[in-house]
Image (cartoon, rainbow, N blue to C red; front, side, top):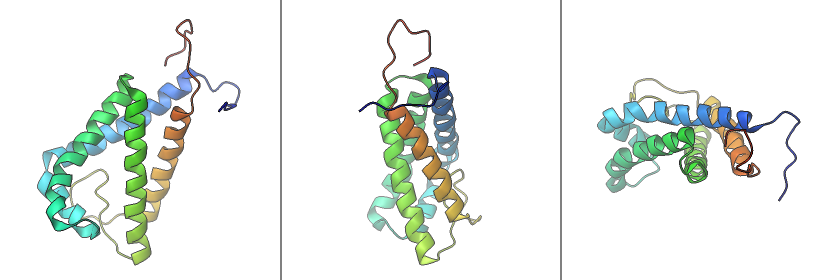
Length: 152
């Protein structure tokens, strides 16, 4: 499948997208890794996960965010890291969307494990959708040859 990107949409644009999305995921993971108990409370507030799975998710999910973010930034296995982030973003949108439709005003747990602050769920859904567009651009990016001086 050949994608025609706008003129000037070079390897640098893909690098910037990777740095932004990877940086967001690294930043989002830090507080959750430090305070998994608080993050578990946020997961519980979504009322979407069986209680037996909440603690496991609270411990594992932030590490996926961190490792995928690092992979996207460093370029090491960045296509796989991008796919993991894309899947997580889809999960986030579904979870946020369900609670938005329910009318539940909760902390999304996006950047903090503090359950005290409520989030604008619709704004978080829009932000995640924009990051999905970035991930899709990375996924559909044409392969650059080794001779190219553009960053991969």
